[in-house]
Length: 288
Image (cartoon, rainbow, N blue to C red; front, side, top):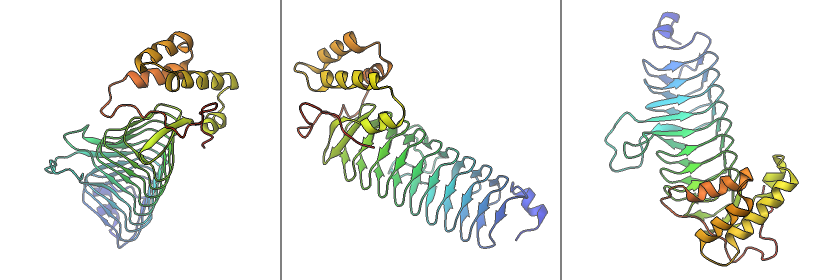
């Protein structure tokens, strides 16, 4: 172990525990109570805030900031260069929010100059084994990516989304709040808030009813949301006309308005639409 003067000169808090086999570059910032386990590598521009744990064989590269209490399991990598042929070594970044858990072999790449220049994962997320988060992705809080999920570059995922194992999300896709994506799905288009999608290629099955109930949405609001969903995705006519009709009838409800605002926002990929497998008389999905 380095002596106390060397520790202080390298920005390592004296309460941090660094395994003798770990490599922490000069200039790295290691906060109070951090634990850097065997054979980890931490770059000079990395910042580990209070209580971060790197279990073993973890690589934190480039301008990466890990929030307080983040846990990173063995063989995960954070902040390596993007898989983008245009990238020429620019000082782009990765930011991981507090208390997020990153499991074995997960990969989170830094941003690119062609995007926002930063890849972000919010607070209290769970990134399971072998999941990949591509450059310039932005995940909000309480997002769960199950094993082997693949996010292409520039994907945006809002709060409290669950993505099932083996699912692949196309570049530039937006996933709205409290969506559930079924395992092994290929998602090529934007998914409205509170939606449930599944399939190759993924189609909108209905609403994430179980998720709405678990998070305390009132029964009356769920009924309103279901009626608005049917009018928007199952009624005849042009989609723009249906949106106008839904706004006129249900637009005062904030969750309906959230869906309409999402649908009208700029999109690279268009909206994921209802599939044939949706049930005609009850097209809502009992998904968690």
